[in-house]
Length: 184
Image (cartoon, rainbow, N blue to C red; front, side, top):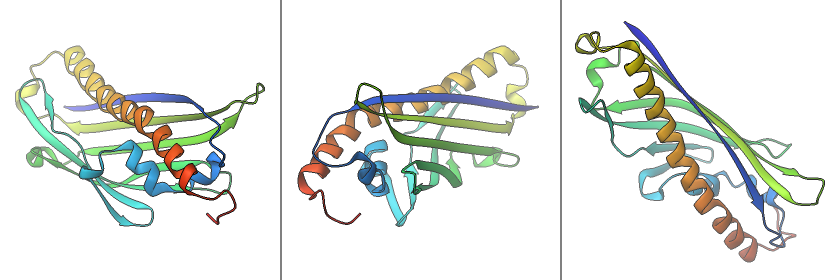
């Protein structure tokens, strides 16, 4: 039995005036990743590729697993940050990897409002599809679907919480340490 779980999270965050352009900061994808994820669980593979180990996750009290996702993070000329998964491993679910698919996509950009306040706006989408192991076939589909969607939502909520907590702090530190006329 094939199932598909989905979650989406939206971020809106007012950017304080820090004497330096937030759009320049958005090109520092290493700093963006540092704000999204625990640096202890993140490995930078190249200038725009990162390997992120998530905290272990428990599904229906039956399976514990740890997603490890390789992400490409880049900023285009319009100062939009994009996040897309390139690869993944799911430690603890190796037996169920046949037919497993994980997709992560996200964006983040600065938008100037009519009131002159700049706001960071973003969205992340997370989708997992897989063949359920036979022991879960007897579980009611609404319970499986609700639990799977909720689990993915919790993953995105944790990332959003980390982003809201860390991004502006890091931006202020970067702005204070970086001359406004320094190259990107």
